[in-house]
Image (cartoon, rainbow, N blue to C red):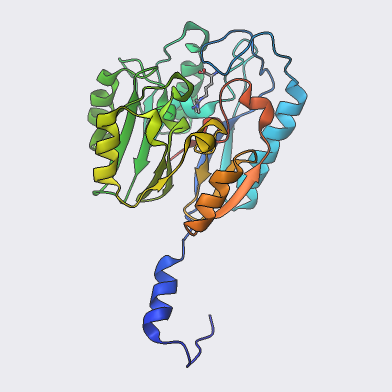
Amino acid sequence: MRLSSNIPPYLLLLSVSQHKFPRKRTYLMCSPKHFDVTYAINPWMNPGAEVDSELAVRQWDGLRQTLVDLGHTVHVLTPEPDLPDMVYAANGAFVVDGTAYGARFKHRQRVAEAAAHQAFYESEGWRFVAPGEINEGEGDFAYLPEAYGGLILAGYGFRTEPAAHAEAQEALGRPVVSLRLVDPHFYHLDTALTVLDDRTVSYFPGAFSRSAQRVLAQLFPDAVLADETDAFAFGLNLVSDGRHVVLNSEATGMAAKVEAAGYIPVPVDLAELRKGGGSVKCCVAELRR
Ligand SMILES: CN(C)C(=N)NCCC[C@H](N)C(=O)O
């Protein structure tokens, strides 16, 4: 930056402090090679709907390439034929400070996915904690490394059991704040709340119980608030590196909100995978060393 003598130093400091800095991330994804909608376990799934799995793979690859082009490392899990929801890799574990707390899926159709994730973490040398309680990994857990010294937010009400929140706190040694989800369209925390940078969240209040809304307002007075339209467009189901916000291209309102908050929206088309009830974030697990 060229310093101009006409700009008062306090204004320069202000512009630097508002600049968002990206952090290089490591992610895990799984190709939708076997993606299909053959059962309905959330309100978005319609087993009668036609699914173009080749289009799903192309769109998914666009997301993978976008993350690589932003400078991030993306590991890829091998998809398995009878696990059509395996593309939603965020649900397989929750990783903080080098420890992977494994998933235990609620619905029988997804139960076998957990073993594939466990095998990945163990073969890559991560500390793996096997779960006793039902939980759907990063679908229902979010981490803010710089909020309150490192804070985990956890959703319950549809998939993950509250007992898993205590189990995650034991496994990961970070405080866990439990938040009750109340709208079945937003059955995982990551459809209703997202982490924009190490201390900032964005969320749709209407997806949470009144008490959970009060908790979020108390903890995050500076949150970027999303509305129902943003949430229904899967606008909160995004992946941010602290500066670039990769989100569903249909979520134009949410893109405008993150831009106004100082981030750079990076839209990707993931329409085919919406038929399974997920978007960008569901497809991407963050591996935190
Ligand atoms: C953002 N969401 C909801 C996710 N993190 N995961 C998507 C899972 C979709 C799958 N058919 C299911 O219902 O489990």
